[in-house]
Image (cartoon, rainbow, N blue to C red; front, top):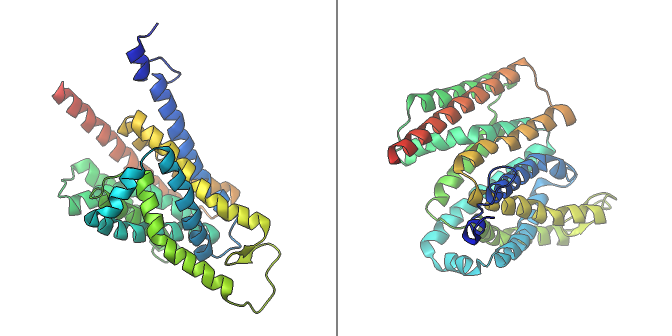
Length: 322
């Protein structure tokens, strides 16, 4: 029988390592699967303007994630952020980045660009490496350089094939990359940070929806859909549900990040864009011709190079510390 202190630390055996590691793995799996399946949910709201969807998402996410923060007993940390002018200034910028990232993602789903969105989240880890080099003076080794060059080649191929720059992919990757870079200067719990950001966006979201509500429409409201704060029951339920869709994966990811190694979480993050890619091709019939296959293959190769190099680097660091 395990000692009490061992049990408290999650040392009891579980299906995947210790109980703590097993729970962390299941939480990470739940978070990334939910993020991967999110296009299905937002596709159900494609009859509603992306600006209205994101406005409702801001409002309901703020309420649900605030409840989550209160349950996690982190309200003091939340209050401290609003009292810290330097952190609040950083959050003003991250608010713009996360808001525009959400809007781009919702627009992409509504306009059949899920494949480009998935590519953006595949590219994101490589963008993070590039931004680290440019702004944090981190040096790239040769394998990281190879991985980034493969990503650049993939984007170039897609640009030639489509006839325009895959701006959805690039904006999602770079906006989230800069978001993570700036959040390093305001290190707080992810749920607390999201409450701050949605609170800062709240006046704009409310103002926009109130304006729509008070603006007369020239035609009768559609049976399935709505306007401002007037929607049919199903549409309203879906809009309110955006708060849950935002809060639940965030909670699961928070649990996973505390119980799993960073390497494990980093490798599992590719699950979400993979699910999105499968949905785009097999459920929503987005085109995936040979040139797109080549572009994605280059990205996958770059991620393999990047991941293997990262694993080797961490092993060498552990050996040096031993």
